[in-house]
Image (cartoon, rainbow, N blue to C red):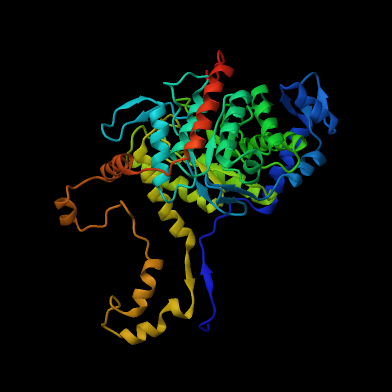
Length: 488
């Protein structure tokens, strides 16, 4: 090997073979063509019928194979998401990976006291500020649901809090088309108008179909709105093995893939080429407790399967991490570490639920800090290492010689910052030094860091004129959405 030759040693992981991908794809097409999807939306049924679908009864739509594959081909294989400043932040394509928060935790744990309370708007603000600080967290989401806000304004106020407390891209939910439209107006005010928002989107809407094989009226309203306005949407099934899908992993993957592909068909028929992020979440239903399990290996397998599928389709995809632990403990760290590593190895593009605890019900700002470090660790693993004449170090080993040391050699000075990852929070002190500094557990360290960030980190503010415009939009929404209740 000469000195100019460079090879990169990279970790690699693929779950499905090409033959297995084809088998799952064909089975999904079979479900769409013979079982169909129930579409509880008159306009959507008409759109699908006009495109060549057969309709049984009033609302069961049978989708022909050729139409599904046509719509896969029209969906964009690359979506660029910008930050609040209009700078490119995430290129959702290929095996690029980005990590961020989730949207719907009903309880929040105080990092100071460890006590748990129903989530509030301040918890949304806190999560946005901590995520804004964390270098390895690429996008923000509400993390918590603000139960101290009237439900007709909950999602609007959550979006406002994120826009005001982070410059990072925003992953958000909405209760229906009405509040989704309000949030889109707010985003346009930040971006500099509707055209600028379409050209440089910094928001991604999250919604989903209903298993098994159903598209609800509200979900379709939001799907069609985003398709028409070219607002990026992450529209992904959330299914349960043994509950809303067959209990077998393969059966769950096939059904959820059919639901995802059917949703892509409707989206692309409404807005050909509009940006959509797909995939699926197929979690096991614990048959003893009847709860969803975020940390289960079956969930990781289904995530890996759909990652391979959507790499095959050439479409941007979504994935998830999280923990079943009800506090920030060793289980939380273990499950987040496994989930983060496998999602990254899958090459999933938009990986959400960073910091989730309690089976998707509980959050803690300190868990975001913990996950920021886990993501940094995993990104270092994925970077691998270069093999060149220089990095193999034959000359430096000869120069130092037997019995020498490399600590002060120029080769070490040139390379150590690039080669050696250093954790910001994990302990690497000798036992006596660690004890002298208070013998703090890892949970204590990240909790104290979260408290420090909340006390000191100041996100870049929005211009005052933009803040006034958003305030006016929210004030109008109070009147427009009066009497609506978007949360069960």
